[in-house]
Length: 160
Image 1 (tube, helix red, strand yellow):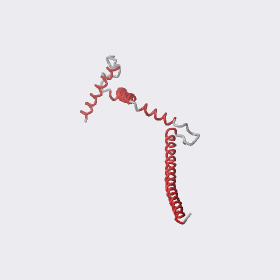
Image 2: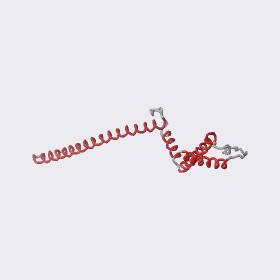
Image 3: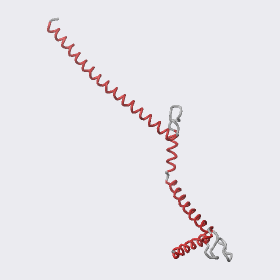
Image 4: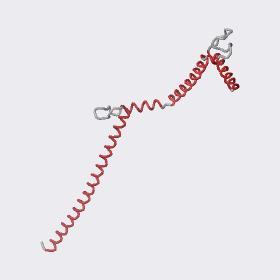
């Protein structure tokens, strides 16, 4: 082999080595990027684990440590209870309960008023049984009491 042929072979080898060096540099850069992405995913996984643990603690009151939890069941149960409580039927029930409470409060106020002898201004004022032995029950008693409350308010305003 002459000198020119040897130089050609050496040039080809050198060019091949430069290509290999470029491939190595590219692969090294890819390795660094993949390693960095793996570290990011590891940090994200740790954050997610912490979030899951906090959710578990909030739903159960437990520590949320391994061996102390039942997977997603407590969170599912809490979500089901919340969904049930926010159903439109439940809201309607709450409104009905509020109305019943308001009616019961009004009844309680009437009967507290009736029991107070200070509100009996004249002998014929109803007190379930009046002086002519009229008896008042249910809505009729309520109507009479409401009328007396209104009358007493009017009398109190007139006295001022």
